[in-house]
Structure formats: C-alpha cells, structure tokens
Length: 273
Image (cartoon, rainbow, N blue to C red; front, side):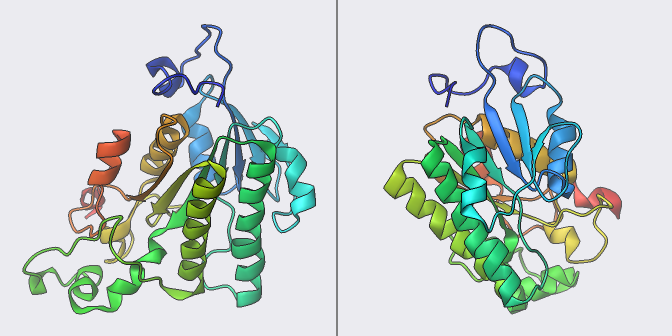
C-alpha cells in the first residue's frame, strides 16, 4: 500500500478529515458500492480518507464508478490497476438458485481475488457472512436463542472465529469458499486478506425479529468496521472477524475484532425493544 510504512492511518484520516501532509490517499475499489452496505460506507467515510471508487451494476454519482460484470475476469482486470485495497461486497444473497450462486459468488469471487493479484493490490477485504456458522441455529441452545426463548437458556452459547464452520444454505457455503480462497491468496501470493462475517444489516436499520436481536448489525457499525479494515496495518496478513452490533443475546464473539483492530460496536439491538 502507499501508506504501508505506517502502523495505521493517522487519526485525521480515520475520522474523515482531510490529511494533506504529502501522503497519497489509498485507492479503494468497492464492488457493490451501490448496495446497502456500500452506501452506508460511502456516507460514513466522507472525504479525505481514501480515493473511493465503485464497481457495480449501477453507477454511483458521488464516486468514481465503473460498470463491469464480476463474472468476466477480462473486463474486471483493468479496473484493478493502481488500486491499493479492494472491498468485495458484491454477491448474490438470500436463497438464489445454484447457477446464480456459482456465477456471482464462486466465479465472481475468484475473479476479484485473481484480478487483485494480477494488479498488485495490497489488500482484499472479503464480505463474508454469519451464514458460514448460522447452521448452528438448528441446535437446541442456539435455536432457543434466535427464537427469543431466553428462559430456556442457562447461558448464552458463543462462537469465535476459530469455531468449526457450519454454513446455512448455498449462500453460506459460497461464503465458506470465499474465505478459503482468501486464505489461499494470502498464503500463495502475499495478499493481505480480511474476511468479515457480517451480521444482519437491513434497510430499516433496526432489529425486526427475535433472531435479529441476536445477529443484527447497524449500518453505522458495519461502516465503522470496514473503515478499520481499510486502515488496518500491513501486519494483518490474514484474519477473520464476526461483526454485529453490541447485542445482549448475540452469540458471535466480538472480542477478536477489538483485540486486533481496536473496534467496538456503538449500537445495541436492545435499544429497540
């Protein structure tokens, strides 16, 4: 990265205030910048933090924006030249057919990592998902938790970034693939790769079901966390983090994000009871 000699970006850069001490702003390319999380990030960063560029199916008027198909590596590759950090948000979500998952989440994710490697990008931030472990929610303790049956719980079960994976659906399985691919590119090609297991982010920006009181993540909290990933020191070579808001009934560990990146959530699901 152009700022790789620093342990992190200065506070002025992190807060969104312009930093003009002769340091070039890192160029950050975001796939899916026009989506919900991309929009939240764009609004949070403001100006002076990075040279933000978007790659999506729709244009983004507030940023340098490109349109390309992530399933087309030849179309994608030239757009990565001169980029420092790639944030890969674009994906097929929900319960799409396998053909869509294959195209967007398997082939598309490979193309992003490969284009980053060819262009000499320093870091890829991969938007993974809590769906890589949400299969645990079928088990008794977790099932009671996400159904809001708190009286049945003697304690809250907690999963860490080191817990065995238990994906839910093809979407969750495709995110497992993305994390494994990131590990490979970090090991084989020296990319800094950060995998972000994002909780439930919604347009209403508030929990709306018993399950969301366990896994909800505010737009502000995810935007703040992604900024920490962008500005993390180069010593973060490969890591995986759960990201939710500070939820009383949350089962995904947030201590690792605090210990490594110094991030803590601001918002709480319980404030919306």
